[in-house]
Length: 305
Image (tube, rainbow, N blue to C red):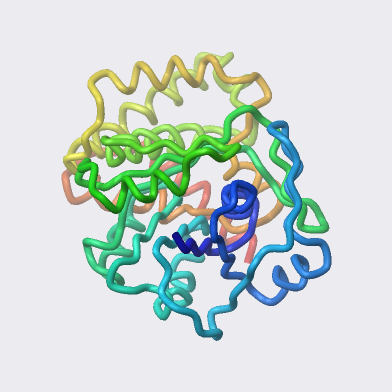
C-alpha cells in the first residue's frame, strides 16, 4: 500500500516514521524548508518507545506522482485549505483520506473537496514536538492513532489499511465507532484547551480552585449540549467521564493550544470554538463559557498580528 503523509512534523513525521520503520511504502509531502532539513539530517525520531532514523522519500505539491492508496492529513486547521489544494493531484478514485485534525468541521471541507466516499475518520493522541534541527521528540507512553470508516462498516479497504498499519511500534487501532470517538476527543480538547488557554495555567492550579473547577464543568456541559444539538453520537454521561479524566491528569499538564500561545503561534479559534458557537446560535443555545474562551483567543490573534 502506497501511503502519503502530508507534512513531516511532530505528528505526521512520527506516525509516518513508525510505518517506514515497519517497512511500509511511505512518502512525505513537504515544503522546501522541511525537505532540506530531511536531506541534511534525515527523519530522526527520539522516543520512549525506541529511536528511529531513516532517509525518507519526499514529494512537493508541484511534482507529479501516481495517486496514493491512502493520504494521512496531520496539519493544523489553519493549514487545511492549503493542504487540500496540495493533494488534489495525488487523489485517485480509490484513495482513502485519513484526517487527524482535532474538531469536526474539516470533515465537511474534505468531503466537499474529494467526495463522501474518500474521507474516512481518524484521530490521534501523541505528545511529540520538533527540536531546532527537525528531530521528532516523542516523550510519553501514549502514541495512538485511531481510524475507521465513518459509517462504522468493516469494509475491504479499511481491513487492508489495518493490515498496513499493524505491527508498528505505535498503536494504530481500527474503530467501529470512529465518529463517536472523534466527537469525544473534540469535547475533551474543547474543554482542556479552552480552560488552560483562558487561565494561562496548567490544569492542576485551575481545578484546585472552585472557580476553575466550575469553569471546567461549565465548558464540558455547554459544549456537549451544543454537540448533541448537532446529533453528535456522544455517549451517555460522557461529561462526567471526561471531568474525571481531567481530574486525573498530571498537575503540570498544558494543552497544545496553550503552548502555541506561549510561543506566539497561530491557534485554531474558529475551527474549534467558532464552529460550536455558530451551531449554538442556530439552535438558540446560550454559550457563555465558550464565548469567553473564543473572545480570549480572538483577542490573542489580534494582538499577535
